[in-house]
Image (cartoon, rainbow, N blue to C red; front, side):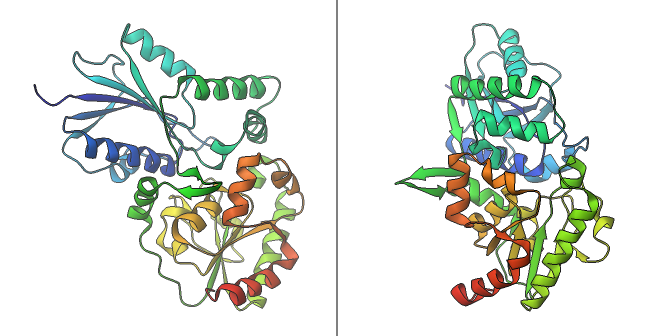
Length: 337
């Protein structure tokens, strides 16, 4: 009997880091099996109207294996003899899953759910609140959050997470972490000592006005400089880097976790974010959570799992005008800055 072929339908990709999560599971599948694998792209989403993942990104970030073929979704029907899987980012999409079942009556799907980021460890309420911040209104964010949470609970066959509970604390999944490190590289501390601010699109989301956010960034720059650190801003991919013309900038389309300049920073600063958490947990980069005036609700509204994850890896947030003292304390305690 020959090797078994597999067809994997993928949905929910909105960032390059989502491709990395998917790639780690596909690499494990290729290692465990000896048949061909066809990955069918069900489409890529966008964030704040901007497409963050190109076809070239997908080819670059997925495993380079002659048994892996990538196809666009011209057909949702699996071939006879193939084993079928649905690989979803964050949660199974109810519509794509329904279309897959309709196109393949009577056939079983192995449903794999990977992380989408820190939001994965939230509740339906935190997911709803995130969609509200992204521009949702009315009842739709609540309905969508409840449906997404229910689908993840009822349809998932295999959970492929970066962070796992082990013995009362959090541990990093070795294979997912290794996939990030393939692209982010080995940590090498920068010279001169560098503090990188991981910016977020608070202005685009309408959470802060441009003036208030600029003042926050200026305060962080002064605090970092007072602690003897070179200050650099990493704009979020949907931001215009020109906003930070008064500061040095590390611009780039890739997630911070995949940028060797940031992996090599002496310390990373930021609000409650996936990138801040991942840089600390994956690479050991010293990380400092900073509370910007007007964003206190971000930490107040965390789920228990989100608060626990952040507490274990990056600690409690500090006020932006107290950042210099916190940076000096990090250097004293760990000697790593």
